[in-house]
Image 1 (cartoon, helix red, strand yellow):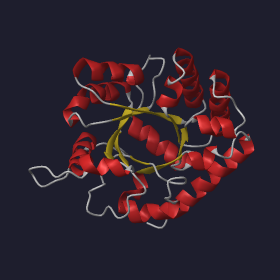
Image 2 (cartoon, helix red, strand yellow; image 1 turned 90 degrees about the vertical axis):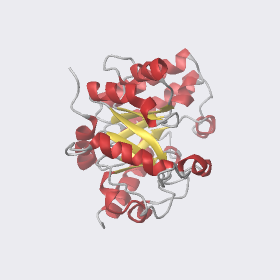
Image 3 (spheres, helix red, strand yellow; image 1 turned 30 degrees about the vertical axis):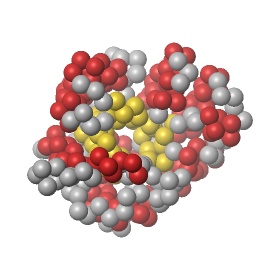
Image 4 (cartoon, one colour; image 1 turned 180 degrees about the horizontal axis):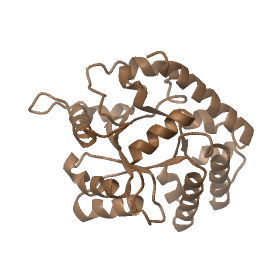
Length: 280
């Protein structure tokens, strides 16, 4: 049996808990800052602490798969456990894996993260559309079947992204706007929120030239260590800010390993985001 669609579940948990997403990004430097070794034991302690501190109170946790994969099969086992425990505590899990390929390979990536009985099943997955949006079809289809969602890279916060995302097509639209258009089509008629979102950087400034109202969520990295603040969100996203899922990673994680300090930091960000969104 498939889950209720991701968009509906996300809307509900955002309304209940606020829209904050916190990354689970066990950088080697963060492990060191937490007085942990850069090994499996350190990885496991870090991940367990973040889940314990936040999974019962934030809307979304977003593990960065690469920081687990670098430890091989043992790291993947820690990731599986983290996903399971986070979802059991009520957080939605967005797997930040940025997968993108064609045909059977894209289908295999989708099976890894979006098949309901997969060990790494997540509520949503980040994907790259830059082999053509149509290459994502296996992931789109399996997400619909499983009640999961996707976050498609559209207007990312890294400076290098512009050379692809701002490239202008023959029809006069740039590539980023084209991706947003595809997502609006995927989400057409869905209520209260579609399940196919875009990754749009909170550091990008005025985006009023883009139609961000895709009837789907907008995952917004960049708050905290990358320089954006909650107060910037209305200016970047306009009326679409109601569907923004702001992501904070280092801004919260640097307060570990103390559980109370992690919770207090996440709550501060959550309150600032609620206040900013309420102004629109």
